[in-house]
Image (cartoon, rainbow, N blue to C red):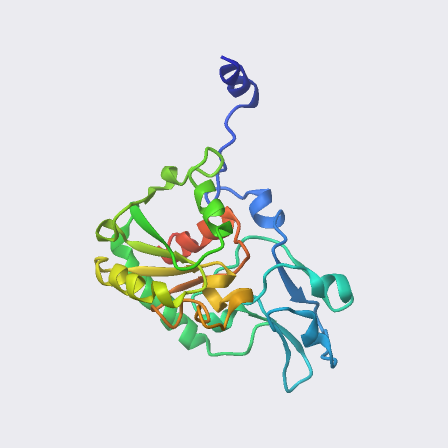
Amino acid sequence: MPWIFRGLRDGVLTTRYPRRPDPYADDGVESLARPLPGAEWEPGLDGLCPTGAITGDADSMVRLDQGGCVGCGACVLARPDTFAWQHGSRQSRVDRAGLIVPEVPGTDEELARLRAELGQRTKALRRSVHIRHVDAGSDGSEEWEILALLNPVYDVHRLGIFFTASPRHADILLVTGAGTHGMAAPLARTLEGTPRPLVVIAAGTDAVSGGLVAPSYATSNGIGSLVPVDVWVPGSPPSPFALLHAILLATGRLR
Protein backbone atom coordinates (compact mmCIF):
# COMPACT_ATOMS: atom_id res chain seq x y z
CA MET A 1 0.00 0.00 0.00
CA PRO A 2 2.81 2.55 0.61
CA TRP A 3 3.37 2.90 -3.14
CA ILE A 4 -0.22 4.12 -3.56
CA PHE A 5 0.26 6.96 -1.07
CA ARG A 6 3.68 7.75 -2.54
CA GLY A 7 2.11 8.03 -5.97
CA LEU A 8 -0.61 10.34 -4.68
CA ARG A 9 1.99 12.47 -2.92
CA ASP A 10 4.51 12.75 -5.78
CA GLY A 11 2.10 12.89 -8.71
CA VAL A 12 3.18 12.14 -12.28
CA LEU A 13 6.98 11.98 -12.55
CA THR A 14 7.19 10.96 -16.21
CA THR A 15 9.06 13.51 -18.29
CA ARG A 16 7.14 15.46 -20.92
CA TYR A 17 10.20 15.58 -23.19
CA PRO A 18 10.25 16.21 -26.16
CA ARG A 19 6.82 17.82 -26.12
CA ARG A 20 7.96 20.11 -23.31
CA PRO A 21 11.46 21.13 -22.22
CA ASP A 22 13.06 19.13 -19.44
CA PRO A 23 15.72 20.83 -17.25
CA TYR A 24 17.66 17.60 -16.83
CA ALA A 25 17.72 16.92 -20.56
CA ASP A 26 18.93 20.43 -21.33
CA ASP A 27 21.34 21.16 -18.47
CA GLY A 28 21.65 18.19 -16.15
CA VAL A 29 24.15 16.01 -18.01
CA GLU A 30 27.94 16.45 -18.00
CA SER A 31 29.13 13.44 -19.96
CA LEU A 32 31.38 14.99 -22.62
CA ALA A 33 34.27 17.43 -22.61
CA ARG A 34 34.82 20.17 -25.16
CA PRO A 35 37.42 22.91 -25.76
CA LEU A 36 36.58 26.37 -24.51
CA PRO A 37 35.91 28.99 -27.20
CA GLY A 38 39.16 30.36 -28.59
CA ALA A 39 41.32 27.64 -27.01
CA GLU A 40 44.69 27.46 -28.75
CA TRP A 41 46.73 24.36 -29.38
CA GLU A 42 49.76 23.65 -27.21
CA PRO A 43 52.17 20.72 -27.33
CA GLY A 44 51.20 18.09 -24.80
CA LEU A 45 47.44 18.64 -24.83
CA ASP A 46 46.91 15.47 -26.84
CA GLY A 47 48.52 13.49 -24.02
CA LEU A 48 45.68 14.42 -21.65
CA CYS A 49 43.21 12.12 -23.39
CA PRO A 50 43.53 8.33 -22.95
CA THR A 51 41.77 7.72 -26.28
CA GLY A 52 43.65 10.35 -28.31
CA ALA A 53 40.51 12.40 -28.92
CA ILE A 54 42.32 15.74 -28.55
CA THR A 55 44.10 17.15 -31.60
CA GLY A 56 45.20 20.46 -33.05
CA ASP A 57 44.52 21.77 -36.54
CA ALA A 58 46.45 23.90 -38.98
CA ASP A 59 44.96 27.08 -37.48
CA SER A 60 46.27 26.22 -34.00
CA MET A 61 42.78 25.49 -32.70
CA VAL A 62 42.16 22.73 -30.19
CA ARG A 63 39.68 20.14 -31.41
CA LEU A 64 38.14 17.29 -29.47
CA ASP A 65 36.47 14.29 -31.03
CA GLN A 66 33.50 13.66 -28.76
CA GLY A 67 33.04 10.33 -30.51
CA GLY A 68 36.19 9.24 -28.68
CA CYS A 69 35.51 11.00 -25.37
CA VAL A 70 34.91 8.56 -22.50
CA GLY A 71 34.00 11.30 -20.03
CA CYS A 72 36.96 10.68 -17.73
CA GLY A 73 37.42 14.42 -17.18
CA ALA A 74 41.22 14.24 -17.24
CA CYS A 75 41.47 17.17 -19.66
CA VAL A 76 39.00 19.30 -17.68
CA LEU A 77 40.82 18.58 -14.41
CA ALA A 78 44.31 19.23 -15.80
CA ARG A 79 43.50 22.26 -17.98
CA PRO A 80 40.29 24.03 -16.86
CA ASP A 81 41.50 27.05 -18.83
CA THR A 82 41.23 25.05 -22.07
CA PHE A 83 38.52 22.42 -21.54
CA ALA A 84 35.11 22.34 -19.88
CA TRP A 85 32.14 20.02 -19.55
CA GLN A 86 29.40 20.20 -22.14
CA HIS A 87 25.85 20.31 -20.81
CA GLY A 88 22.76 18.87 -22.40
CA SER A 89 21.65 15.67 -24.09
CA ARG A 90 21.36 16.79 -27.70
CA GLN A 91 24.58 15.05 -28.68
CA SER A 92 23.52 12.86 -31.61
CA ARG A 93 24.68 13.59 -35.15
CA VAL A 94 23.83 12.18 -38.55
CA ASP A 95 27.45 12.43 -39.71
CA ARG A 96 30.51 11.15 -37.87
CA ALA A 97 32.50 14.34 -38.48
CA GLY A 98 29.83 16.33 -36.65
CA LEU A 99 31.11 14.94 -33.34
CA ILE A 100 34.36 16.89 -33.66
CA VAL A 101 34.19 20.16 -31.69
CA PRO A 102 34.56 22.97 -32.46
CA GLU A 103 32.78 21.87 -35.60
CA VAL A 104 35.00 21.31 -38.61
CA PRO A 105 33.85 23.50 -41.51
CA GLY A 106 31.84 21.41 -43.92
CA THR A 107 29.25 21.73 -46.59
CA ASP A 108 25.70 22.53 -45.54
CA GLU A 109 24.55 20.80 -48.71
CA GLU A 110 26.02 17.46 -47.61
CA LEU A 111 24.45 17.70 -44.17
CA ALA A 112 21.11 18.65 -45.69
CA ARG A 113 21.38 15.69 -48.06
CA LEU A 114 22.01 13.27 -45.18
CA ARG A 115 19.06 14.60 -43.21
CA ALA A 116 16.76 14.55 -46.22
CA GLU A 117 17.75 10.99 -47.12
CA LEU A 118 17.20 9.82 -43.53
CA GLY A 119 13.86 11.64 -43.36
CA GLN A 120 12.73 10.07 -46.62
CA ARG A 121 13.47 6.60 -45.29
CA THR A 122 11.85 7.05 -41.90
CA LYS A 123 8.70 8.96 -42.76
CA ALA A 124 6.94 5.63 -43.31
CA LEU A 125 7.55 4.69 -39.66
CA ARG A 126 5.16 7.38 -38.45
CA ARG A 127 4.26 7.09 -34.76
CA SER A 128 5.13 3.44 -34.07
CA VAL A 129 8.76 2.36 -33.95
CA HIS A 130 10.27 -0.96 -32.89
CA ILE A 131 13.91 -1.21 -31.84
CA ARG A 132 16.20 -4.21 -31.82
CA HIS A 133 19.15 -3.74 -29.48
CA VAL A 134 22.38 -5.56 -30.39
CA ASP A 135 25.35 -5.84 -28.02
CA ALA A 136 28.48 -5.91 -30.18
CA GLY A 137 31.00 -6.01 -27.34
CA SER A 138 29.68 -3.57 -24.75
CA ASP A 139 30.93 -3.23 -21.18
CA GLY A 140 27.33 -3.17 -20.00
CA SER A 141 27.05 0.50 -19.06
CA GLU A 142 25.04 1.46 -22.15
CA GLU A 143 22.60 -1.35 -21.46
CA TRP A 144 21.67 0.15 -18.09
CA GLU A 145 20.83 3.45 -19.77
CA ILE A 146 18.80 1.73 -22.49
CA LEU A 147 16.88 -0.19 -19.83
CA ALA A 148 16.10 3.11 -18.09
CA LEU A 149 14.11 4.21 -21.15
CA LEU A 150 11.44 1.74 -20.08
CA ASN A 151 11.06 2.98 -16.50
CA PRO A 152 8.25 5.36 -15.41
CA VAL A 153 10.48 8.46 -15.65
CA TYR A 154 11.19 8.16 -19.39
CA ASP A 155 8.47 5.68 -20.46
CA VAL A 156 9.24 5.60 -24.19
CA HIS A 157 6.09 3.58 -24.79
CA ARG A 158 4.17 6.85 -24.48
CA LEU A 159 5.93 7.93 -27.70
CA GLY A 160 5.13 4.74 -29.58
CA ILE A 161 8.67 3.39 -29.14
CA PHE A 162 9.00 -0.30 -28.32
CA PHE A 163 11.81 -2.85 -28.06
CA THR A 164 11.50 -6.12 -29.91
CA ALA A 165 13.30 -9.44 -29.51
CA SER A 166 13.47 -10.13 -33.24
CA PRO A 167 15.22 -8.11 -35.95
CA ARG A 168 12.44 -9.15 -38.34
CA HIS A 169 10.07 -6.89 -36.42
CA ALA A 170 12.49 -3.97 -36.03
CA ASP A 171 12.66 -0.54 -37.63
CA ILE A 172 15.83 0.53 -35.81
CA LEU A 173 18.99 -1.34 -34.86
CA LEU A 174 20.45 0.16 -31.68
CA VAL A 175 24.01 -1.15 -31.52
CA THR A 176 26.29 -0.87 -28.50
CA GLY A 177 29.85 -2.03 -28.00
CA ALA A 178 33.19 -1.58 -29.71
CA GLY A 179 32.43 -3.98 -32.54
CA THR A 180 34.26 -7.16 -31.60
CA HIS A 181 35.44 -9.35 -34.43
CA GLY A 182 33.37 -12.22 -33.05
CA MET A 183 30.19 -10.13 -33.43
CA ALA A 184 30.85 -9.09 -37.03
CA ALA A 185 29.01 -12.06 -38.56
CA PRO A 186 26.03 -12.02 -36.12
CA LEU A 187 25.66 -8.28 -36.63
CA ALA A 188 25.68 -8.75 -40.40
CA ARG A 189 23.00 -11.45 -40.14
CA THR A 190 20.90 -9.19 -37.92
CA LEU A 191 21.21 -6.40 -40.47
CA GLU A 192 20.24 -8.74 -43.28
CA GLY A 193 17.21 -10.02 -41.36
CA THR A 194 15.81 -6.56 -40.59
CA PRO A 195 13.16 -5.20 -42.99
CA ARG A 196 13.57 -1.91 -44.82
CA PRO A 197 13.42 1.00 -44.27
CA LEU A 198 16.05 0.53 -41.58
CA VAL A 199 17.96 2.95 -39.34
CA VAL A 200 21.18 2.01 -37.52
CA ILE A 201 22.18 3.93 -34.38
CA ALA A 202 25.68 3.63 -32.89
CA ALA A 203 25.04 4.12 -29.17
CA GLY A 204 27.97 5.12 -26.99
CA THR A 205 31.60 6.02 -27.45
CA ASP A 206 32.60 2.37 -27.83
CA ALA A 207 30.20 1.93 -30.74
CA VAL A 208 31.27 5.21 -32.32
CA SER A 209 35.06 4.86 -32.10
CA GLY A 210 35.98 1.81 -30.07
CA GLY A 211 36.68 3.83 -26.93
CA LEU A 212 39.53 2.70 -24.70
CA VAL A 213 39.84 -0.79 -26.12
CA ALA A 214 40.34 -0.07 -29.82
CA PRO A 215 42.11 -0.84 -31.95
CA SER A 216 43.00 -4.27 -30.63
CA TYR A 217 43.27 -7.90 -31.67
CA ALA A 218 39.63 -8.39 -30.59
CA THR A 219 37.79 -5.20 -31.60
CA SER A 220 37.23 -2.82 -34.46
CA ASN A 221 37.26 0.97 -34.22
CA GLY A 222 33.57 0.98 -33.40
CA ILE A 223 30.77 -0.48 -35.49
CA GLY A 224 31.13 1.90 -38.45
CA SER A 225 33.36 -0.58 -40.26
CA LEU A 226 30.86 -3.41 -39.72
CA VAL A 227 27.48 -1.84 -40.59
CA PRO A 228 26.32 1.43 -42.18
CA VAL A 229 25.50 3.90 -39.39
CA ASP A 230 22.85 6.62 -39.70
CA VAL A 231 22.99 8.28 -36.27
CA TRP A 232 25.99 8.57 -33.94
CA VAL A 233 25.48 9.00 -30.17
CA PRO A 234 28.60 9.79 -28.10
CA GLY A 235 28.90 9.29 -24.36
CA SER A 236 30.32 6.62 -22.08
CA PRO A 237 27.57 5.83 -21.51
CA PRO A 238 25.06 8.18 -23.20
CA SER A 239 22.23 9.19 -20.90
CA PRO A 240 18.65 8.01 -21.49
CA PHE A 241 17.81 11.48 -22.77
CA ALA A 242 20.73 11.32 -25.24
CA LEU A 243 19.49 7.94 -26.48
CA LEU A 244 15.96 9.27 -26.76
CA HIS A 245 17.24 12.28 -28.69
CA ALA A 246 18.98 9.92 -31.13
CA ILE A 247 15.84 7.84 -31.67
CA LEU A 248 13.71 10.93 -32.26
CA LEU A 249 16.36 12.36 -34.61
CA ALA A 250 16.49 9.08 -36.53
CA THR A 251 12.72 9.00 -36.99
CA GLY A 252 12.37 12.67 -37.94
CA ARG A 253 10.36 13.60 -34.88
CA LEU A 254 12.47 16.54 -33.74
CA ARG A 255 11.62 20.04 -34.82
